[in-house]
Length: 300
Image (cartoon, rainbow, N blue to C red; front, side, top):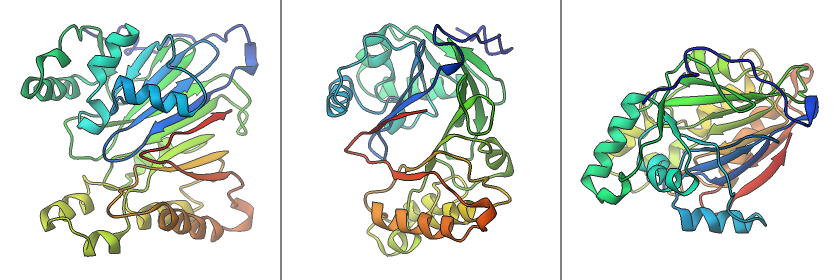
């Protein structure tokens, strides 16, 4: 096992479409019971996280008006929690493609499989190790994994770049960062000059505090290795010094069904974005991802 391209970033060439190559993003599921996002260019197809099984994945594609992709070049995993990893082995076998994840994450996934059905781990052989801070490439997509603070073995967020017509004048950039307790300066830096941003907005603090969860779970969620609240996300979005506001699309993701709702999360973000100075106004589109209904596809 290993990732031969992870130690250095090979030259990425455009496909037949040349400089007009773009991303297509489909968020199949986002929430505490399953996460999966499909990222496509003209040449490369990636699945980020596999928290829903083949049948449910197929239903999500049908809801988007298309069938299950015939080819996926790789599956990338953010961390081992089951809502992100439960179908890694199944879908890796389905598409006969490698899974990219950190070594510590794979160890934890294998422990989970050992506690359940051995069939899940059977023939899950195509694994490539990655490390936070070490860029690599799959096809025509450059990938930059970065460390995030969450109660998992070795969790990462991802930035993806491909040739295209970015508003910032360079490559098109997509960033996915969910499952983190707070936003370190490194994460804020990684999210700059992003054309498409998927950002966790997990819970409303008042709903969480007054909700039915046991106190120890509430403490976990609110901790620095838990999940982002609407308040923390709003502070980030309102601050023009850290959020540049250049994204064409901003997607609020991983909403808790018990401690948040789409209307509350959207309103909180809208108020934050409206408070930005006019010279740094956010002119993109705001969306809220769902646990049950796919979102997209978005074309960049």
